[in-house]
Image (cartoon, rainbow, N blue to C red; front, side, top):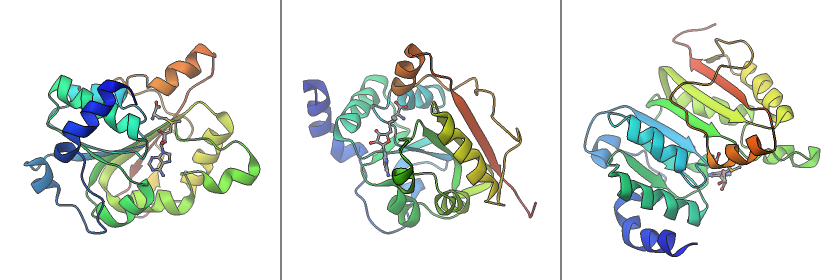
Length: 211
Ligand SMILES: C[S@@+](CC[C@H](N)C(=O)[O-])C[C@H]1O[C@@H](n2cnc3c(N)ncnc32)[C@H](O)[C@@H]1O
């Protein structure tokens, strides 16, 4: 951790990092308002997270990340930009989504550049699995969205195929989406662009009834 990240982690953690607990979160109590909640899973250093939250201050953002330097960095950005609409949970996203996020509560889920685990023997470690997308869908409001971006084409194809196995989620683009105008490039994405990697955007909306 840089000195800035370490100092932000020590001084701001108690204010903005919510302890993991296997109980549904009361977002009105946590954020002090009834605004919509968007979850971001694996925010990395949180640069894009902070930029999105700064541009949408009437939306609450809950970032889930395990990497301590990234948590420190986002904490420093929360302070620098005065982001009262961001909280962090430093824990594996799967139990958080299973136990802390109330059903039908989320306006959106962002998953930008999830680890691709390219080797076949490691595919089971990929975050995006049918069961996980089902869990995401259960936690989304009707009309809520899930937005996933990757620069690893085989993973992009895997995500599109896996989405098709979750009837609650509708991909209005049928294939890849167009980049949403408010999405800034992430830190990981910048490195991919330098290597001239293609970027694949995947977007789906929760249906209000059977397909
Ligand atoms: C490839 S990085 C992308 C980071 C960031 N989204 C970006 O685009 O710059 C993937 C991130 O997901 C985090 N991550 C992976 N699995 C996770 C999980 N189960 N729960 C929470 N975070 C996770 C990693 O710690 C890492 O920071």
